[in-house]
Image (cartoon, rainbow, N blue to C red; front, side, top):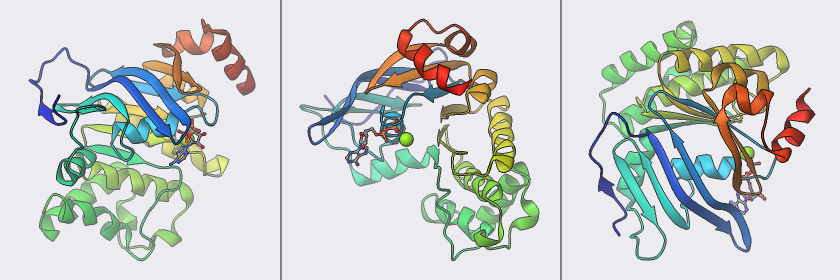
Amino acid sequence: MTAYSRVAASGDEPMIDVRALRKSFGDLEVLRNINFTVEPGGVVALIGPSGSGKSTLLRCINLLVIPDDGAIRVGETAFSFGQGARVPRAKALAAFRARTGMVFQSFNLFGHLTVLENIIEAPMQVRKMSRDQAEKLAMAQLEKVGLADRARQMPNTLSGGQKQRVAIARALAMEPEVMLFDEATSALDPELVGEVLATMKELAREGMTMVIVTHEIAFAREVADRVVFMRDGVVVEDGPARQVIDTPREEATRNFLSHFH
Ligand code: ADP
Ligand code: MG
């Protein structure tokens, strides 16, 4: 079994393909045999109680966390884990992460850099772009999230919603194949949630392949094609967004959703 391989591109294949994924932290089995796919341009909302393994699954998809067992493919890049699999090399990991954009609850902007400098950093360092090229790209991404006029400001002069839109622009500047959102609006004041959700909705409309961990059930119902409900490290239910949210098949999904209305 090889840890890193190119897979022939095909129109019918999922953009994200997670197979038999397992991850433990010490004795704690956090992901137990997760199978999960996202079609090209598909939007999947990942929901479930705190501690169910949602963040760990997202982190595995971009290899911030290395799984114990199973396989992950994003686009044409595939990795296998477990017995006999080689540990991916740092260079392969970095290249892979660059193509899987991640947006966190806590923004994670560099406080000592301007908005523009935050965005050009990775394109210059990882993609080896010139400053000129990177700035053009960064400005285009800032336009897209409606913050071109904030390019020269420091992050601490922005609202939480603006910071998160900068974080989205920064991820997009790597021209990722997929975008992963981990509770991107959970740290925001309620009046700032809408602008970030609107940015995510626009990305979805443009055809970005997305996995969104969220407690915004109405947003998931509206924007996601599919909803995946996780509990205790397993996928309990996976189906069309409206079906899972309006008429869940599983008792556990019903119980979880009952807390939201
Ligand atoms: P969720 O995002 O659904 O709330 P997480 O994936 O963050 O769930 O966490 C699942 C479980 O794994 C929790 O019990 C959490 O404490 C544990 N966990 C997550 N990351 C680590 C880690 N790096 N080391 C040890 N335990 C972890
Ligand atoms: Mg989490």
